[in-house]
Every structure is written in structure tokens, then in C-alpha cells.
Length: 315
Image (tube, rainbow, N blue to C red; front, side, top):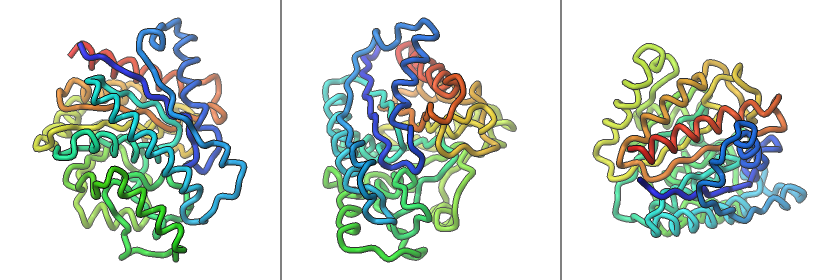
């Protein structure tokens, strides 16, 4: 049985829609509604946030609030590294997905020589950089951060020097860049991408399983194939964005997309992936209760969290 620590990241600086910082507490409320003692059972720590910056100017239009996102990513990296060094398994519950760059940095900080595989369960590829972003929201950029990817070939935005400096720092947290390679990345249910991201997906031949693949082959097969594909990796990190689930299930996320997986498929998928001994960290992001009815997305997320945890401790 593995010891677990919950790392709470109540930050939403990287999101375009307000409210994701409330997602962690919404999941806790869902636990209470289910009569669960989950959050009593496991130790937790809250990473200090910088949400006061939401009341200030966004700074660069191509990397909004990037200084705050950098601060959060550094803090998350430190907490994740500390947790792993204590031989404890980190489960990260975060607001927006930009904080995952910190999670990955924390894993690499602890295991700099290890080959890290990523299973990215998300509607979005999150491969934009400030040079290609259409929105300037950094929750669309965490994989570019850890891949040390500018995608200059697809450049559409001109950056000022300050933004370039912050972006460089984000890519170089822990003084390791890149932290992962495209060959060690697996997409599941990614379906809402823009041209610059599609260019990188095609150019680097990123392994991808669509919602149709899950329906056709079944969750078990897709999970096994994803893990087999990353067989040459020493460690695997699983990141679950709730918008991987279909928009019809719940509106409780900032960027819902149709043609996603069901909550049952998501639970089965995560549960199966977590049985792998190589999985060293699990993360759930982007629950936004302000967009939801009756806290449905947080309830779905909590059930998936419980299934992931049960697979982990019973493995």
C-alpha cells in the first residue's frame, strides 16, 4: 500500500474563464455530499496561490499573468519534489492546467536522469507557446513548457523581451529543458486543436487515442496500449483534465468540447492506468463549479479520483 498526499493548487491564473480556483473545494464538497471521509483519510497540503493578480492588468496579451504562473509552477514543482522525496505518492488537484508544468518539473527535479512518460487525458493538446497562442491563456501551454517548444515555424505573435524572459524561465524550471520528449507523450481524447498544435502533432507523430478509439477498442485495450507505448519510460505521470469528458455530461469546466468520453469511460481508464507500477503522480484539473449545475462536474471528478486512488492502494 502506498502512502498518498493530496497537493491542492487553488490557482486559475492560466485560465481564460474565472472560477477554476474553486474546483478543489467543489471536489471536497462533492465528497461531503457522498458522505465520504476521503479528505480525512489522506494528508493534504495547499500550495499558496497568486490569485490577487486576477485583479491586476494581465500583462502581455500573448502570455497573460505569466509572472504569476511562473511563481505557481515553481511552488508546485517544489511541493511535488518534496512529496516524492518523502516516498509519498502525490495526487495533485489543481485549478487550471498550466500548473501541470510545475508538477512535471517537480518529478524531473527528483528524478533528473529518469525518462518520464506523460499520459495526457484532455480535450486540448496544450501545445501552444506565446508565439502561437490565439488567446494568451497559459493553460493552453504547459506541454510546450516542458517540451521546451516555441514552435517558431508557426509563429504569429511578436513578443516583448520581458515575456520572452518569463517564458524562458518557465521552460527551464529546475534547470532541465526539455523535461520530456514527444516520443514519450500519449494523448487520449484530444480533439480540439488549432493549426500550430496540429503542425507539432503531425511533425512529431504524437501517439494519440481518440474517443472513437476508446469506443471501438474499449478502455482496457487503450489503457494497455498507452502503457505499452511508454514501456521504455522509467516513470509515468497521468494528467486528467475534466474537459476530456463530453460537454453533455457537465458544463462545469471552462472549455467544454463535444465528442468526449463518458464519466464511466474516464473512471475505467484512469483506474486501469493507475495499476501500473511506473505511475508516479496523478493530477485532476479544470473543475469550475461557477459554470456548473448542482456541482455535477466536481462529483464526477471526485468519483474518478476515488477510483484512481483505490487502484493505486490496492495495486
